[in-house]
Length: 437
Image (cartoon, rainbow, N blue to C red; front, side, top):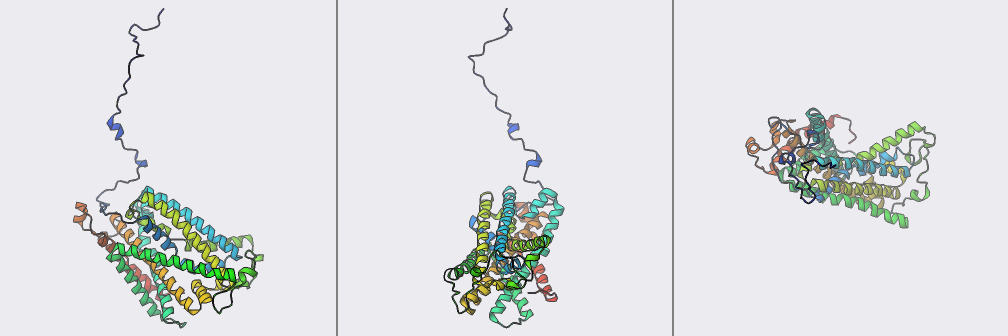
């Protein structure tokens, strides 16, 4: 009996054809939760103005290194040293701080590559939690945090130059504030005139900062090899005669703590304080995410720049601090807030202190320039989002409606000028405070 149906046909020698998939399925959009671009109501968020990205890998690298290597590397070593039981532990703290900064910067690099928009944290908060938290972040950052940071950095810059021009211990406060205000005005003018001028200044000052760190490391080599400070000052012998990991006694090397009797809980508190100070010196890497849309290829260049710049900075921090302990007596490391100037005087005499004062002030100027540049772009981005008054958006309504690309310099200028009032108010408010600056 045959089990084949009457209509059964033999298809062994026939070619099967597979139908083409429906074109509508190929064009089907993924679910909204997988879309990185968030659709915005044009009445609430005006369309972004087209402008050509101009930042290369070298520019991004310079921004990251320039933002981190500022005043922190020359001001915080004493804070770290006063909260650790030995110089060896201080060096370990600097290594840990660099690794922690690297992990944070790597996370932000992933976010920047996935959401390549200007605004940084503002965009990420807005995408995840909505406009309310994003607007709070923008107002806090633009009106309070960044202007305060710029005011302090400009005061440090002015204080160094007043020290150079007038070595007397008493500095006229009004003159310091006036010079700080002029410095902020000059940096603002540079950013208003040209974006290229701002990035060019950043690149130039980057070489100055790296040269400062390199000079400190080079000055440690004669002390390390020949026990010579290069000047009439007695060379430091602490790095050879003392234990790098020995617990200090009270009043040893300027220590105010008897480390051999400190409880575990108190020790954790001191180490946490030291790590916080080191992390402050490693801060600033998040600023680059505020200008991701200005990069030519953020998906490629941002991770590369982060994974190149952060290790470079960490190596510089560790080697610089090793040089401090080799060149200076250990009690001077803890006592000096201007440790680079102390290194210059120890190795090259008064002229060395003058050279390092100029170099450190140049580093402060570089950080100030990057602060102004990134905050200007954040201000424009926030205005386009509707978080700030529309007058700060820069382009006219006609530009927005026709989607013409306005002059990038004018867009940057309006965002930069929007910071002036907050900076000036913060700057002169320091006159009525007890700031140590």
